Length: 490
Image 1 (cartoon, rainbow, N blue to C red):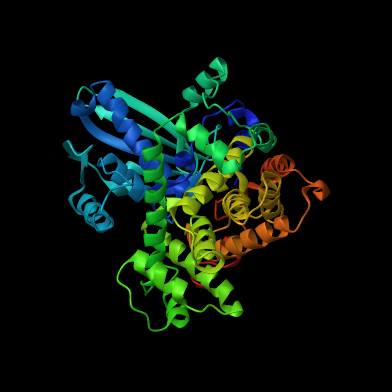
Image 2 (cartoon, rainbow, N blue to C red):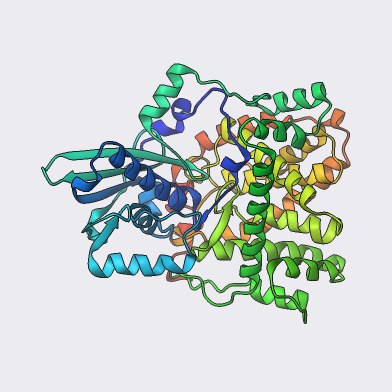
């Protein structure tokens, strides 16, 4: 199959100062994929908003959705079709009760109708009205077009691009931004790691302090604190659920959950009844040296097993890599510093979010654009930097930790078996978490004067590698493990 390669150029990227908040990089949503599930879900919400703005919603007779490129090739395994239906139904991925998802989907499928925007009921045949097109559109590998037919037979169409991490853009919006050269209103606008380091030196502040000042330009301190802790609480609850859920993951690969057994073997008999008391119980556990890696792996597995089962996770920076950051933060809380609390948690998330935003501006966080280096590689880099600052690293060492983590993920492909975010995705989160810890430790033991490769150079190299990578290794399930091992083998 010949894929369009126009989207592999820098044409689609926004080369300007962007105000990307920590809360853009760390979003609460539903699994299994930020670009294939959360993005299309948000696109459907925006489509509904457009229809309301144009006063068209009440006139609609029929809606269809065309999925293109990677959204089509791995859409079934990533639940893209389900996400689109939930979005068109007016559901919010951040707040929908997880137990309601299956009920809503089954109702749409059995009745062949959908309650559009939770307002009007129209006929909808999910098998015919969601069309999987294998061809790629020019601007990005993840594209979808919504078509609404009115009762007067007129048509309204809208095309969106899911560019990774739950971010959704429109082609005309990209062009408008490029023409106006919108500038960021942050007091410390940052495109590159070198700029971040310059601010730290000039202001004698840590990276988290610089990021905090930027966040304060957008919202109050109380709101920042509340949202950061809400993100952490969602991460903690996700790990808790994953460690206490057993069985087989959905999708047909018959992948058995492993976090449950691993957790039982590690914690033994313990008394707790909530995620927070669970955390305190783990802190009391005497962790032997050989168990440290097992605990970290357990935390990462737990998150991504929940993600694979369409559970609620924090996109960090994507759903497929959602287990790395919580696993590394848990490592700090239960292994490195039992006295750590909300202050350290917020500090960790601020640093992680900023490093992720620099990668997004300079390269990509979309596996459909850059392979898994854009997901696990970036998440490992984010976690390494955040851990390094908590462990006393200077801003130079923090950026070095991020660089080391990414340097050893360069070229990592995305080749999910059956298009499911399970093999090799779940295990890769454990690898990314372990590498993040290792990268932070290496940076702490290194004099920044001896560093040879700046973070910005690694980000540039990652983007070049992404452009050079064969499309079949970019979340299409057309190469690598996805071809070597098929569903029947599993």
